[in-house]
Structures are given as C-alpha cells and as structure tokens.
Length: 372
Image 1 (cartoon, rainbow, N blue to C red):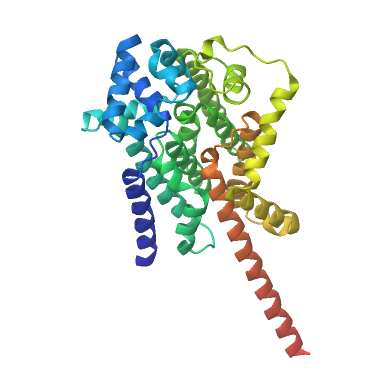
Image 2 (cartoon, one colour; image 1 turned 90 degrees about the vertical axis):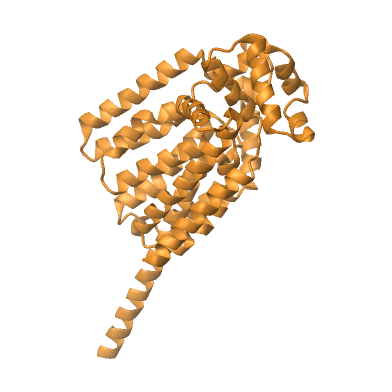
C-alpha cells in the first residue's frame, strides 16, 4: 500500500514541478491572457497594451518574446488591436479555464503565470485519477510513470491551454463510470465549459449510462451539455465550424478571421487529413492505438468479459479520438492524452488477462496429464 501511494505522489509531483518550472510559453498564452483582460473590460489598444505588457514581463528573455510577436500572423496580432480581438472568439468559450486564470490573479499570480500553473496542477491531478483507474484493473500501479511519460502528460503540464483541465475531468468521468458513481453526470454536463469540443465525450458518456439504465438523468445531463455548448459559443461570438476549419487548416492563421472566405474546394478539406495521418504515424499514440486494435482483433471474444472496463478504457476513448480526428484533423495530440492513456492501460490489462488465462490453461493441462 505504501508503495502505491509513493508511486502516485512521486509521479504527480514530478509532473506538477515540471509543468511549473519548464512552461512552454506557447502562443496560446497571449490569447488566454487577452481573453482574461477582455473579461475585465479592456478593449482595443488598451487590451493589446495590457496583454503584451504582461507577456513581456513573464517572458523576460527577448528571444522568447520575439517568438510570440514575429511572423506575419503573430506580428499583425501584436500590432493591430482589432486583429487581437478577432482571435478571442476561438478562445473565450474555454470559460472555466479563463475564470480560473482570473481567480489565480487574486492569489498573487499574473494572468500569464496562471495559464501554465493551472495546466501543471490539473496535469498532476490527472495523474492521480489515472492511477486510481489503473488500481481498478489488474495492471500494476508501477506502470503509472511509464503510461504518463509515453502518452504526453508532461506536455499538457507545460502548456498555456485548457487541455490538462479537460484531461482531468475526462478521466474523472471515466473513473466515475467504472465505479458506478453519479459524478459522471455532472462531468458530462460541464465538459463544454472546459473545452467545447469535448461535448463529444459528454455524448459518449451519456450514451453509455443511458444504456446502463440511467435514462432520465443521462438525457438531462446531455441536454444540459448541449445547452451549455450552444450558449457558450453564442456568447463568445464563435465564428462557427467552417470558419474554424478554414482558419486552422485551409487558410492557416489569417490574422483577421472575421474576413475569412470559406473554401468550396473538396481537395482543401482532404489535405488536412493526409497531414494528420502522416503526423499520427510517427507519434507514440499511433503505437498505442495499433496495439489495442491488434489485441481486440486477435482476442475480441476474450477481452469483452469485463464490459465496463472494455467500454470505459477502450471503446469510449477510441471512439472519442476517432470522432475528434474526423471532425477536426489537428495533429495536436494533446487533445488525446486522456484517451491514449486509457487505451494503453486497457491493452496492458488485456495482456495481463491473456497471460493469466494461458497460465490457467497450462495448469489444467498439466493436471489432466497427471491424472491420465
């Protein structure tokens, strides 16, 4: 028992310290700091001044600040206040993350610092929940640091994004499902407040609970998630799916997304999927997915024995990843840290199960031979 707690604490603490001490300071920091200041009432040139003034204090080394302000897109956003404001509808829907950034300022952190400290905290908490999930399986808890390292928890701990928070609540929802708890209904309802695209997971979680018999509360949670999704996007002035797709993949990083012309060329929409496939092949997550699919194909009947683990650790995470990639073919695999880690754990559990079955069969064979 002491060893288990040591693994939990050591791995979670390592992720927390790493995230705080080695922040990535990615460009999203600019957008989320600006979104927080916009909530404070800043607009136009004042918003730009406050945002970049704080970023400059945080990123004291000149080369780092230059990376956030050079290049046609970033330079335009830096110099033109209207361009900065036009970026915010992509980021403002992350309501919980932005409000936590504002809360942490009252605790003594700057907005810029809060963006990655929050990520480090939630990445660390995600490790704890992942450990609890592993403890529900036949997999040794000693494997926790390996799963964490290979599936990218260190990355989401460094970033100024809500991905670590989304990872935590996703794992919490899955853990609640495994334990047959009621927390999953709350998690499903609020996921769109953390990342609007995670309404996909809300739907998958509630489909599972609906099929398990909790029909009314499942429908209520799903409808709540849908209402939150619509409200958040409307209040944030979200540009819509096609604009987001074109901005990200077809007409990349137009500094004035309000003016994007939507492409009508089919080929423009296919190229991003080719890029995603190329990136996925060389990413560690590809190995996780490939091994899991192979185990499922090879031993489909055997691995369905524990249906809760089968659906919670394999089917739901896999369908989420596949659906997300189909709708938004981004090669930012930080979106899938939680799902890849769960699938990894499921694969390890299946391997352990198959080994146990082989040992049992061997013992029965030896006993049968001795009787004869």
